[in-house]
Length: 258
Image (cartoon, rainbow, N blue to C red; front, top):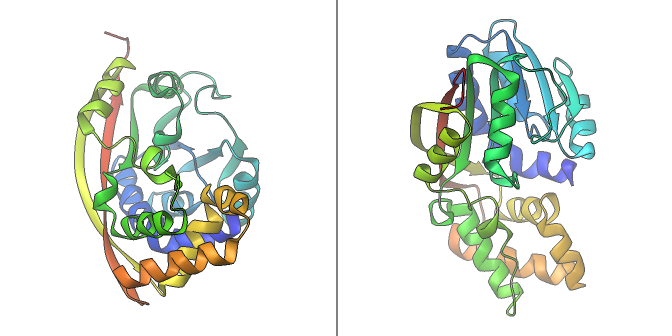
């Protein structure tokens, strides 16, 4: 799964936002950076390239992602870690960065409180989260294809996880409850560029948790063909360009909870 994710989805969906987030991180001038939910390392590589000699520690809950990312991005220290139980002393990092990972945290306030613990007082938490599903043209087309391929009970992973934290007010409230002050919040729409719709569909169906649903269906080729057909009808065969919207937050760790 990490290989398919990295080949088909990272360049199209994740790299544009990683470049943006790394530029924002570099402007903060951190010396020690901890990255959560690093995946295969697209943000990690950009953090190393954008900042002036930072120390970057990249973590992910998934051992396979850590193994893949550590081989791909060798300039960082890689560790398997749960964001809700970080294996680092308090006050260890000046910046915490996370690209499209907070939506996966089962208990977000608990995770944010743990982030605050390992940050220095006044340290920053910089992250992004996807906007509503309807603002991500690739995934609107993907979901339509899934609903055709699975007429009964189609997979709702993208509705219920990646796009489940699309209310900036709710995010800000959770940050405040964990002891953060939101310094900046921005809605950001960038363009994704895919070589072909077929490659994009392959990435989603084999490089994300949708893979499990497709395997359970028992007829993967038929599912893939239906999804590609629907996505092509909506996006074209490719090359294809489509808008994707996210929210970007920068929050400062308070010295004490209010």
